Length: 264
Image 1 (cartoon, rainbow, N blue to C red):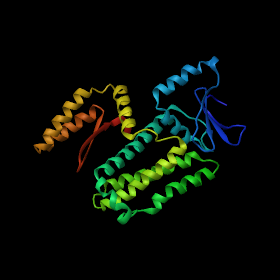
Image 2 (image 1 turned 90 degrees about the vertical axis):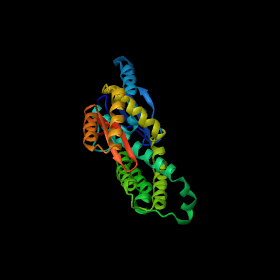
Image 3 (image 1 turned 180 degrees about the vertical axis):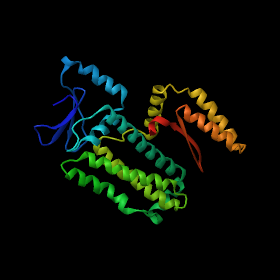
Image 4 (image 1 turned 60 degrees about the horizontal axis):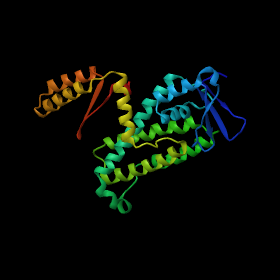
């Protein structure tokens, strides 16, 4: 077997994933991952340290979980990068839910009496889908793939300004709670969303040599242009920011910036 791959161990209670000479033990409850040196003579200690210096430990976990299936036996750098971007999207969604909850905290006391789950089949399906995936020979790839539908729905609901805020908050609170129950069993989403997002932004700012001083000046100029309703200049500055590796998302709540490469 190659230094990068998956296999079943001798014990039916765990499976192994090998990355750069280290074995990740995935136990039946999905919550424990161990690094073990497979071959010091091949310099694998250095390789593994380099791997962990490049990627957040949760990203590596998610990469393993996402690719651990009957049809996938190798884990490439591209797989990890894809997982990193997907994971960033997930953490962004969790952060949006938290911010929405904070902005509407006065509704919390009404949830028990009047709050309604908008789409119970999606909310209740989080735990049900996880159980089904685990019963399918501990199919972690299926388990984490179910997250995508839930996060897409969460973002659509957050963007829906016509929905009743109380019912939105009730639904999103339940989604957040159910996701964390499942995710914690898998050993992911253990960070505060804001902290993970900032870490990823700082990483990609450095990787792409983005001049944040110049970016801030352009964003300030664009904000001024928008206030003055100079939309032509606003669009021109947005294009310049895009060329600098920064994407701008405008909404009714204002403008947010992000790293372009994290969405490519």
